[in-house]
Image: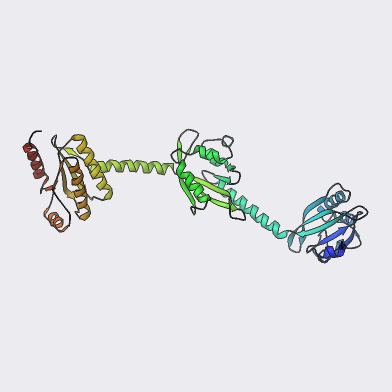
Length: 394
């Protein structure tokens, strides 16, 4: 088998490299080692052949603090106490600091154990790492300032870091929240669970482009807090698989409670805008005022049918005197109401038809069918009560 010489071996190495014998003497170096010009580097022309590497490190210890530490580590390798030793150190070069890493690995030399020295310039790597640490710290400061804090989810282990502020905003001490995704899931309102899980894992699995969801979390007091929950995947592996997800919540309880109050008030106003007034045991009147949109049309129909069923009335008068606009949409609402009323065995009387309204209705292609029409509410009531009196007793 062909034996490769030390010189040939070293020439194949792209970075500065040198070989020590078992006594710590430099016996071979490659060109990158000799050409290293950074002042105070623990390699280069100042560490050339012949050189007692350990002694030179001792001489450099006043100028380079790491030199003595390197000498101790290399001695351990040469003595067989360690297979390898790695040292990271920094030294000044012109107007900037450079970062190096030197690795000493055991290398038998026939008479004992020598060492292979590899000298790496890791300046760019260290700068990137420092920038990354700085960005992480800056992000952490920003997140810690959020009123409701934040969480940081390891998607591989399902461990979650919940910031102190996140825990405290819900009334818990940090020690009371298990650092696991199950802790968050257990605090979700049961009614929200399917929707929130779909939004969360839909984003993680790539079915949704982003994650934003309204959630309710149980506070220590037992009350539920409404939140806008936002999160983003911040790390993936080489294949694109999500590894880490960071999120935050914003308390929207006051807004949601205000919306619910407004919704309840709107519901009551709609009910007030479609009252069903009994005239006799058999006749009810619903005066309509204002604009009849789709939402109000539904309210008209449901109120009318529920009221007729409850009162067992036989005639429903729909008075449109106060409706500002009668178009095909409103006409369709009235026809549909009449058909639904007829299914309950009752009749509809339409009143409040002003002359201009009557002209509009004539132009509309609407099947009015058996709907009785009267010009005024008074005439409509008179018709309904007389018709009921004339109806044969059962």
